[in-house]
Image (cartoon, rainbow, N blue to C red; front, side, top):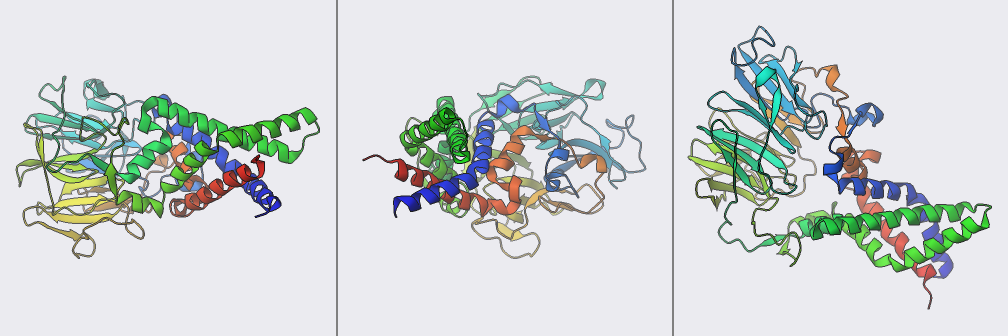
Length: 486
């Protein structure tokens, strides 16, 4: 193309994308430092209306715990019901009854940050102790009818994913390790699980690209480098807009063009890599990356001595098979907790790349497995898995989640089973209006902005980033072409 054509492409793409690119850069920096902003909330009143909770959507209902009447909550809430029920999810914990006739806030003692109140599971041990787990902490219900944080020997920056109990053993699952405790549950032993049979250390190409895009592939140093590239893109946007506006101050105009030219030409490789890797993290390229595994890159955070580094998701004890059922990003496994050994389970149903949201047994003793790839009924004893809604055999692979029910939660503690869709929720009972605008963490807001969903909704997952990625790379390359000096 002629230089004039390259110039037009660069100019109008740059002007059209500058706002979105600024938003991507700022949100990306926030996403890279979650631990620093986990206490910051954003009111949903200031967000687009679709971000308000409605009909228990958005993971507001993840699960429930049935409490026998008179065990803990008789003095707090008296209702005409056989059972008291704790309902939990992405907004915290509430107390209700088996008819869901009313709801009472049950978050006293929990930190106010919305990140802390993304409750993954609530359980009661054999001796009646109640525990709740969120990604940033384990909490025990006790003195003065409040939650109290339980200190744990967590690995660096490890987040918690689940909790379960059997007998007098309490098991808290982190993303990389299992933590086991016995009464009075004040100290925990960290357990590193052994590698499964046939383990070769290979990881999905998607994970490598993901960690490369954030810089986490090279630790904190990598994150800071990517933050620097984001800052460079911010400078390119600002100086480009200034030059386009043609301010009367010639010094400002000249300096803006000089910075835009120098920075753009000398950082083209880095800015193109960031745009390319971000483009790959959404469909359709993402699907190909998820389905392919490659060796972990030497010298990176993926080369860990722990074969389960950031792979553990859910754990339950299976009374039928007398073992611990472990869900991971690599599939389902049978876990011998005493020996820390695992065995792969081949008859398991497919699970979305986003992980399981539901793992509980039905009245017949079969496992109900719900994720963004749908809901499946898994009979471990007979080695069968069927679709919960259609009864058809479950597919072997999860595949793309297009057109499938995005299962976010389930309860069997009300008069009829309740299944909550992430987008549509459930209409089993009217959601209290006080829950509509529960705060959202700043990190989650940044995630919505970075993924494009903040601007055009869920369709952004499939279209927006793909289109914006192509435009960004073309804008960067066209700018390089018109400023390239022979």
